[in-house]
Length: 197
Image 1: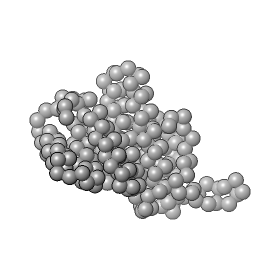
Image 2: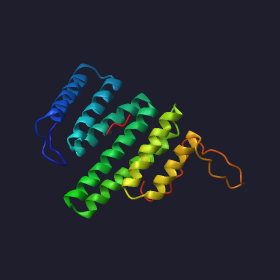
Image 3: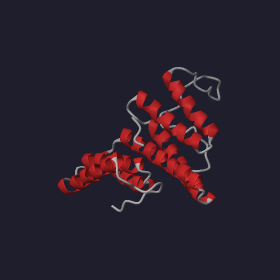
Image 4: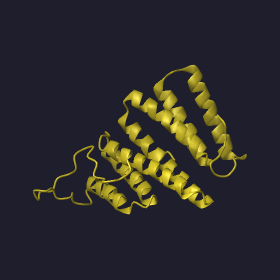
């Protein structure tokens, strides 16, 4: 794997050492076994280490591979977590591009990827096995939407989380009755289709 950072150059130090160790674990997992769970774990570790060094493109690539293995495993909780991580990486890419003064189109493309992944994470959150985990996923997705400037959509996700926490009443249905949103129901109306990052 070629180590080019999207941000500052990859230098020496603890973050670089963590990356070397993560890439070694990934190489060992790929050579020793075709276990989807082990490969997924190694890819997530590599993505985390790459993101810490602002190598967001490579981190995103590792997350895409990890998401493939999570899909093979049928692990919805993990798929949702990885969608959140991909959204966080994409919004970090957008922030970095903006700070460097890159073309506005590059920032918009990264934000569009972040939004799409946040929407996917919110959709999958309703299918997770643990309501506490669903709340965390919704709040992470909300943070990404807020950082992309989609404040209304961020508030909608926060509202879903507050309803699950019992701190807010559900939105009234058309017939006037309060009822919680159906699992997996996407309340977002968008044009664009433990934290990892």
